[in-house]
Length: 405
Ligand code: NDP
Image (cartoon, rainbow, N blue to C red; front, side, top):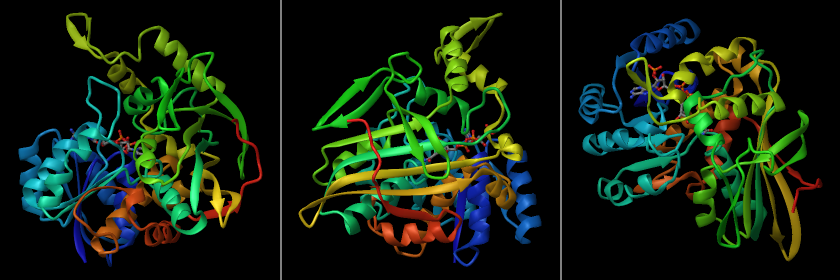
């Protein structure tokens, strides 16, 4: 029985809140706080209707440590789940340290003026969390999050040595809009317009961004979704996995994009709408990407008519008992089923369920320790069992297909 404070009432916050409410024996008191109180209240009303549970709500500016500290002191949670934006990671970590509360998030910090997400800012909190006898769990969504746990599981149960990891993220869903992003548009577009990197033999290798003509891509035949064009992309979990997976020779991350999506993004970039610096407009300063975010559909609103599935998983190649083996661990999630259950699309669903499960691991004492942790550093077994019981079943199969060398 524990009190949990959830910060961020967007697409993911909606799922985390409802999933915590479904597990009331662990999360006995829930408070949902965000910048816009009305969003928290709407989710609270739905929770009351769905599960007959009252949760508290609060307005907080999570960029401001004193506001966070006052809220935490007032609600007295054992754990804070941060599903606001990556910009708020450090302020929320500071507030957790000041009040003696465990911390969990789903995306690593990036400074607003530099779209290079890196763990260095949050790994720098290692000593502070250690000294405070607290846990900070980093990147506990699906990717990062479950993908890291799949790697830990493969290392623990399937391989003596893992040599190659390919993480494949496919959204084979249709939402009916000509162009929309599946999570926060600003964060999403910053991520996918970057130069791509993958890791090989101790070095990061750069290739062109996914919107460039010479980007690296191939067709992968996804279970239940069929063949989809998959693009090499930099993704944050690779940074911690190269530290923690023994014997690794190469790790890559692939994501599916449709031609229509890439064409829209190319045009938006070419006309300057993805810029993150301020421009002068009719006597005001505006950031084009933030303005674009205001025009695009709210990712949470896509859920109503979303059809199709997401398929996210990892392919491992390595050695077991002296023999080369290949394994594929993946989850398939259905957009419409996620909507039926918690009024969400599958991207928010696959992020929110692991965030709830990670918090549950800490509160039940199944994950323990002091300091800052990436998911592959923690026991994957109870976590993967919990996500399977809470709507994200996963499978391990022998992999017999082809991947680009
Ligand atoms: P949304 O934009 O839908 O929601 C973010 C919420 O945070 C909004 O309700 C927003 O409030 C609130 N917020 C923003 N700034 C502040 C602030 N200063 N103080 C308080 N609240 C604030 O995003 P998503 O729900 O789609 O994503 C949430 C997080 O999950 C992001 O960090 C994203 O990167 C991460 N994510 C991780 C994935 C994974 O697999 N690991 C996959 C998908 C997302 P308001 O509406 O009032 O602006």
